[in-house]
Image (cartoon, rainbow, N blue to C red; front, side):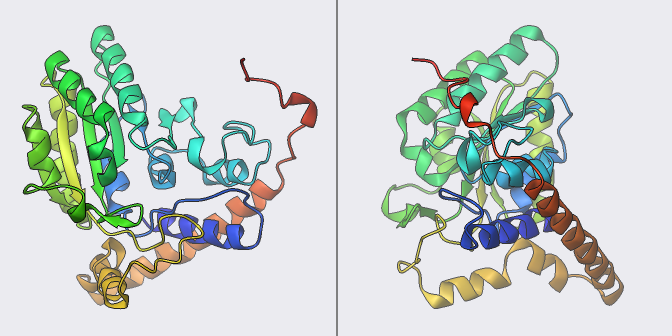
Length: 302
């Protein structure tokens, strides 16, 4: 979780320094969710994320230096600087990629899950998306399809309170997003996404169900994003007290608060090690060359 946190903080600094072109979408405060789910996956399992998916990529094993280089528009080992922050993928790590279209990655993940089911190879696919995507028809259609076809697919909606700049509470009615999904007959959970152990338990059950051929699971993970929707978001729609309270209940703060002194000392050591790791990754990313302009037409089809 700390690796994701420091990666995202460094990403913000690189954006402010002009080293990253285009928008970035940070997942500060949501780290427990990708870590908790990817912890139970095999190397061959697949993950698809939204444009706020740096954490999912890191948790799935994508090297930090490669993501930094990709975001900088360098000739990275991922997509050669063509995908940037909101579209990069890594087949070598089973990362289906981010998707800049709200809910757009969900049917892609279903296709991968159908392939896994037909191959009977025990692979599991996870698709993560935001709360706003629950108002996209393709997401609801895919949930129904996954249930009917008993796909080894885990739907993870990261309910971070806001759909871009609009509270999700003003966009839907009902007890929860999980209860809404349950109407399709899918096994559903609502979990505290800032509680790492609670996330791990629900994630493991969901992954086991999929791997054993018991079909898909829908998990609503409640969290709060501590950064703006995107890199230029002034967050004028939020109250100061809201963010203050949120910083007290984010996953890393909780672990610190509930730990004894020796454990917190251990956390300090981890922080020092990861901080160095991230700085090394940035230095390595800066060593990647700029793409050759003559290759701009590659992978483009008209």
